[in-house]
Image 1: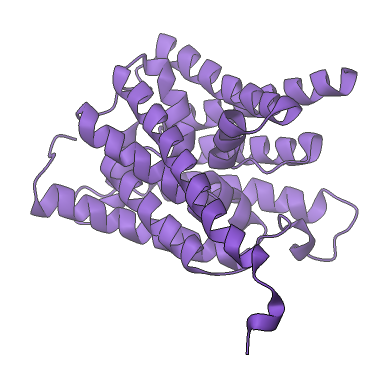
Image 2: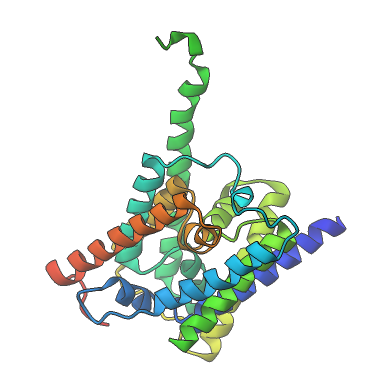
Length: 153
Length: 138
């Protein structure tokens, strides 16, 4: 039980720092995100600055902040290694929604602080999109598991 | 730009703490997915991270004007939400999971995902803003 409470507290702390980072950087404002994507308009490089700052800290932490310094490869999440249509197609669809709204998942949660109805609508539809994706990917995965290897010739 | 970098450093610190203290990757789409669809302890750790995000947003919204309301009408906003939810789960990550965490450990998958969603994001904004002139106000 003690372990559970500690994990929840550290998760909340990490979330709080992440949220403050998004607010300080201005990335909780969809206008700033869209002006980074708007290369033909009044372009702003700020989103790249946020990414570079975050990656600099995290990469250094991952590289030197642990005992096994041999490689980054050991940090990869298990079971996710292929470059396939799911990765690229999913990323492409996400980019369209991101460009339309100026929200990726993090800022959309922080935006609840604005109290706007639109944020709730966005979050609910995002949950529905996630549920659809779960249904679709498990349906496609099942027949593959059930197919006996001998049928391939 | 200075504030952008300072905010980025905080996001990197958060991802690092979450990785070291919780053994998890600070990808917000995965955290949302866990909070919505996983059970038990898994769900609550994710919910707590999201609570931290919301508290940050509420606190900032109370003292500054840096948490503005969305600029789109509700229907296109819902469509965008569907695409973001569906796409991030299919790709297994978003701007934080692939962008910050993936690129930090030099993942080729994440790099390809980031290039892809930035490209379609740029095209979408170009078409919406400059071809269809859907929204002009900045």
